[in-house]
Image (cartoon, rainbow, N blue to C red; front, top):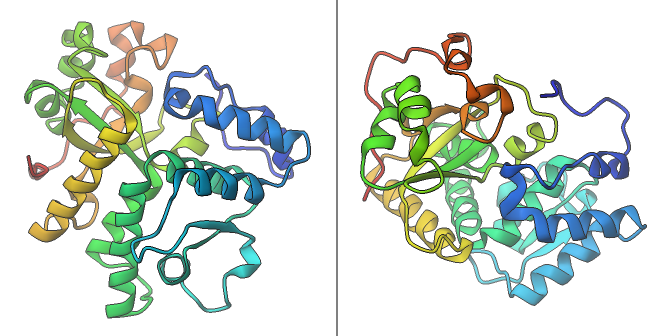
Length: 282
């Protein structure tokens, strides 16, 4: 298991070449992601490729404007990034892994990304760009950057997650992973970290029911609906609407975690916090 972020000064094409698309966390994005990465490595322009994909999928922002991936310079000075996307449909995109993964998530989860952008833009329009984001915008940003979707049948796995019961979740219930419980990455900053994973990588887990089939378009609708319901109920606020999940503890995500001793490292698998986490709406 490699440690650390992408090396300073590493070229974008070299960084793309370093992505191992066979890793389980990249699986939902591997087909499209690998093809885009290969095309950029051959000299194609990332934004032109993304625009073609977006057009073929008919992607639009919350105002119904066609989604376009544009150069970072298209973002006017002093204009908030989220507000610009909402107002114009333009997603400023740099040649780096962070923005590459952001675009991949747009292509795979357009409804959820559209709603997150609408939530962020609405808060900015109402409150302006503050030195601190505030509860709702903070939660939307955490989701956008660092979320995983924690999908499970019933409440057994979700309760173990919310209760920081790592031995129960990852050892006693290990046999049920990928059948009664699974995780799908969402946050683009999280995906960037996982190019070179390390034990302490921790995601913000958003719990949802595991549905038959598991197609991404169906999951996208479920995520968007859950976010909409949480925002309406006032439970989409800050970091406490998520459960922390050290993702290298997920079975099959790390060879080292086959031993129960892997989970005794309390610097990573922490014992919990003082008050209960709220559940997401059913």
